[in-house]
Image (cartoon, rainbow, N blue to C red; front, top):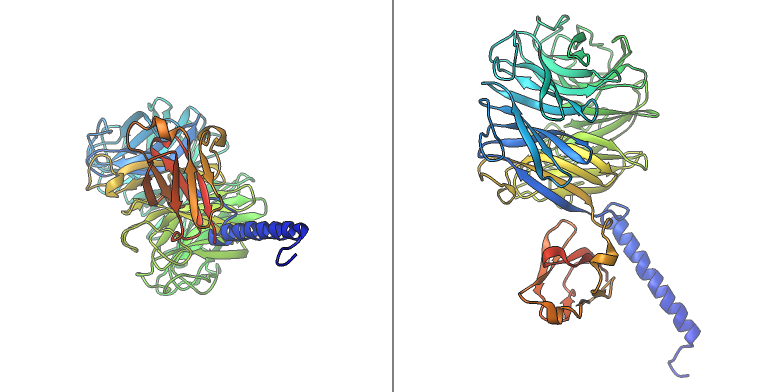
Length: 556
């Protein structure tokens, strides 16, 4: 027999080699991408705006269309009218970002702020923002002046104002969050220095201020939260027991309705994250501080079956916080995204810092079908938890950042979406599925702008798992791509190429971040791509016009 092995042994060895290769591929996907194989890419995008500053702030999905609220200073391009200075800009698009309608709301002065939109039902929406105006769409502002007040509008699905109302006092009142309540009204969270007007119980320099309106815009009650110092607001949600849960931060000064036994950690005026639970009669059931020595704040909160998950930011690495990326308290390191879970009494269960050596923040957190969470925020870091940063200068330019956590807070997947410049990401995110989101934000990336190169435009994009949703039968019909997985070369073969090409076409190869790594001209019915110098990983191919596209695994 010499050196020849029996056929049964050869078959077993061949089978073991295949199993080893598939095991390597599985480990590569799981470990190399911190995920279970999810690969994200841009499915579609749209750019809207004028020659001045335009950006996205909040959005909702209705009947497979999108309603986006933005701030704008433009009076041209896609903006049909500007009342003066900043306006609130309402945009309605179809399922792939084509503009269906748009309208601005405002007066002669600045309107907008942390603008958001919430759906009471499929035909009636609330727009919440700030306004300094006393004219235009503002019918009554009892406190004219430069400070600004909360402005709430109810509109129909034609963009027509049903009613609008100014809220606040003669001080400064800024919007922070709002949500539709079970009775169809709206609960609004602001930040206030006023001690008159609609504010009946001020406590200090800056208070959190809640006001509840019914469906007709009538004020039902209001409540200030805070001590003698300053507070900042994050979010307000109605809870399953018809109470409310509020997230924000406080500098820990006593007085008012702030409880000084809250386990405050800050030093030198730094704020702690502050969570307050109210019952259905607006009585404080409990409140608690969370954080370390430096600045910590809560920006959003979700009720779960066994407690709450809190989204925020931190500059600390002590107290309740561990795992901070960078130098704690150092402005050059900025914030980490900070996520923590508490039980229904406010006891801390787990916490997690997310980010790199620069600044991260987030206001969007969604639950996923595996009991975990998806965070949609922004990053300026090229390191730490962040992979695939697109900005041309870390710490200055920010990408939209997706971070997937397990139910216990472990990071399993992340994705950067950016164009090199600064992407202004606020609350403009809609979840379609666990790994599929539509985002709306402002961008000053030159290649992403559609009107003027100096100021941001509004960009709307769908980001989805690019390993699913492709109709392989129709997309791959007529083309062979082999071997796959591949080690040294990949063959692209299509008999129709020999006779059907009337002009120069190319095959484009991109990595998981959408960056083109190879492009070669189709010159016959069989093209060979030499991959001996290409790093192992998942790549995508597409011909001009998208007639053929697919995925390639390179392994060694």
